[in-house]
Length: 236
Length: 404
Image (cartoon, rainbow over all chains, first blue to last red; front, side, top):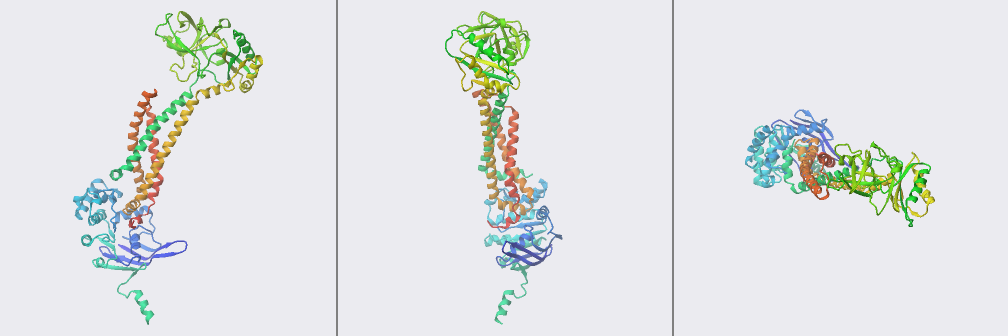
């Protein structure tokens, strides 16, 4: 479903090159629930933005649902984002000027879907996250947890192949976080592929598989972390 | 199209939306009326006089001293002017088209001065008048030298023969057979229409009887006269420069005012319509400034909204909006605001015109101006919003993941 090989992302200025990702390899199978973890600045958000085609990468290969995306133009990338990917952001990213119904409708309109089908999908998605009764409410009138549920409904309404979640519970209190997490697990059980970026080990533990990122590279947690082995070498 | 969500979003930004729509409405109302005034004024400026205006020089002359009668002086001057190299013809008169000063009276069909009179300007002149002015005789004949009489300030001008313009003739005799008919300028003193000229306008530019003119075969025995000269082609400049010297050479007892003493007809026309051209220029500037301010307002508000909605634009891009979708979002949003503005603006424009109609006797605003105004303002809105909208379309989708 999502396969990156030897992927690199370099930010260049006149004087310095910074590797946000370096020789980054990951393979997420269809139907998997993968948590990408790592400390702040490790590159996990960069991974997510590249995985979600929000940003381009500098080197390597990225296949999304069997398509090599590096050569795609902006319009084609927009279409893939719209049709194959559902985003769940830490800050919910609902559009404050639109009510819940209109927020969920945004990606469906960009797909050029007919009004009747849009309405059906929106109500189905809101039903699924338990907020059908709040369709006419504005984001500011909802709690954080409810807003994130609307964001999930927006991500689900387009029936994406892949859900990308960026710290989906980062802005929520424990109880709301639990609710959102349970919803994600339920969605996964129904067959969705989910890649979630988080720095919260407890949350990551609820995923099927964890991928740990340090300094822009995937680290196998089964092995001893590298900085330990360096320390070990220094003492020997 | 995403009109419904755009309208929904605009409802949440009422203040900015209403302000910009009102600005567009006011601009439309003012620009429509201002352009209409410009057009009206330019139409006046382009109005013809019925003269052949090329190669005409007008001299304003004031005899000084008290000779008893000025007729011999006038005749000597005319002789000198007609003998000037470069001069084709000349005559002396009280006034001429576009002079903005002259005589007028009411012409009647009956001797007892009923209430059926028609207002007419009076020009005095001799048998050289028509040729000098270049006015075209369409019926009857010109004056003969034997018909030329004179009158003084104490007398009333009522010659036995007159030449009138077709406009006046048609108003006096709607049946169209004015030639040979009798009309009365002074109660009980008949004048026969011996000739009809196609067109000649009155001295004033603001009358409602602009084409009603009577030419009387008279010399007005007065110190204040206007000599009109028709020069040969290409000789106008030379005559313009030498005519004062020629007149002073004949008789120094006169004043030709330094300003406007000697003028070509182009100068006469320019002076007559100075205020109209000034008004047209002023109104054009007002239109330009208003349109620029409105455009700046739209650019300002759009840029502000784009800046304010960077994150939202990023989110839309992340959710699948193409650059063109973002561009069209902002263009459509502006179009909807501008559309509301022009709807109100059309009502305001017509209302403003109605008010001016009653207050300043303006004409009714032609709907073409409203239509042009609508198109201009909608176009201006789209042009003004294009740069901010283009900037918006370039916001990266990665903006969605950035914390504020």
